[in-house]
Image (cartoon, rainbow, N blue to C red):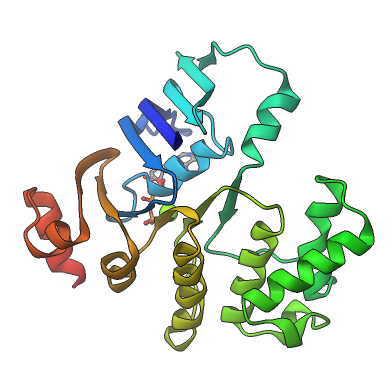
Length: 258
Ligand SMILES: Nc1ncnc2c1ncn2[C@@H]1O[C@H](COP(=O)(O)OP(=O)(O)OP(=O)(O)O)[C@@H](O)[C@H]1O
Ligand SMILES: [Mg+2]
């Protein structure tokens, strides 16, 4: 079973105020297998975030198919989804996909554990006790067992991002999407977040990670995907991607960032 599969995904943003249409995703086909860690790299504006957001239905697509755990959720032509499925059924399938963003967006007036408990209670309908117990365990897993009653403002950026990861994990997703989870952090805080992600990968979580952390991609990814101007130009093992990339654009990009 593939955890994520997309075929021929296309997306155009129609510019406002005189700007022309912008084709941000051009025929994106990508499969992520169970327990695989796939890193997406590429320059700003390549369409990386748009692609991740499309997988989670935070963004619509014009063309192409999206399967989650082999279930076809979207089969779009001219922006119309041909898959007839009840809203709840699609929502349930999408609950298998957790997402962590660059900005953590924790509720400032709720404590660490309350931030983590909210969705399991309201969406998964766990009791208060169950949600609290589960959240506590997960916060311990991300190294925040001693911060459960702190408010976000009392935490470092790295700790806040680990709360955001815990919040996603509390929904027990089978796939985790990360969109540059460390790029808003001070350099000294990046390592602790990458360590949690590495641990998660080691536990067999299926992960699709947009990152500028080439060291992480080298060490943890099974495959690395290079996106450029809305297209996937190269998919390779980290060894090949970072030592002898096949595409000239990949080589230029890596020279500029390494
Ligand atoms: N809602 C929107 N409306 C119009 N254009 C958009 C919208 N969202 C993104 N874009 C444009 O689509 C292109 C791709 O954006 P996207 O955020 O997916 O890039 P990215 O690869 O994630 O870049 P970065 O590395 O800077 O995060 C960019 O040119 C961006 O300006
Ligand atoms: Mg982005």
